[in-house]
Image (cartoon, rainbow over all chains, first blue to last red; front, top):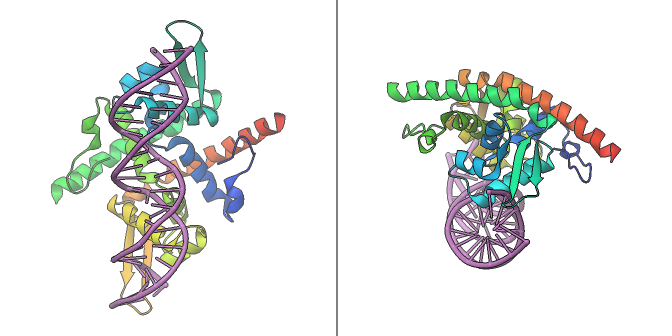
Length: 124
Length: 124
DNA sequence: CGGTATCCGGTGGGATACTG
DNA sequence: CAGTATCCCACCGGATACCG
């Protein structure tokens, strides 16, 4: 994970760069709600409360915080309209778009995994 | 994420199944050290202290805990040899092996991402 | 060598209330 | 509608010590 402000790379503290790159990606997409937020944004631009409705269990506060982090990492962009009532739209950046194949593959893997686990469950 | 013991699926608490499947995968591979552990296990069976040497900053305790979780999720298998001094080997299960493409893709994405971020860094 | 047990500080994240 | 601010507690994870 590279720090946008300092330019410092956490890989510098590791002797093994490649494993760190895996970790970089994980840090960008993990975080309690990021996967789900990203998944919904794959579908197109969404407003703040639209995301809240799509993710009923997330709190207002956490949605804000997770979106801020995704913004910092330049995965998500925020567009604010100067109207009343306020209107803010969130969408993937060009960099964020490059995550699409990974997110979709993760969804597919999750499907297969759940099936396998359910089968093992029934057998035992 | 399906609970191996209860068979309960956290997706049941969601109206939207597909986003939950993404989350399932994230929950399996995230966790503070799992990505790196998995990455090293892609390379083949490793002993406990071998992993510690590969991941110098991980503590003894955390390596144990993370391996236990990966075991519970049936991603990693533990093989204990009855010898003195003890010898324990960790390797990917068949299910764990299916994560290989995702992990490798994550590594590639991490590489590209770091390059892009470094470029933006220099320009500003 | 490969663990587990205990202690304990830091922080992630929920609940709630307030703002433009 | 979208976002902060504050409070507060659970739990994550480090340090350390001990065990087969």
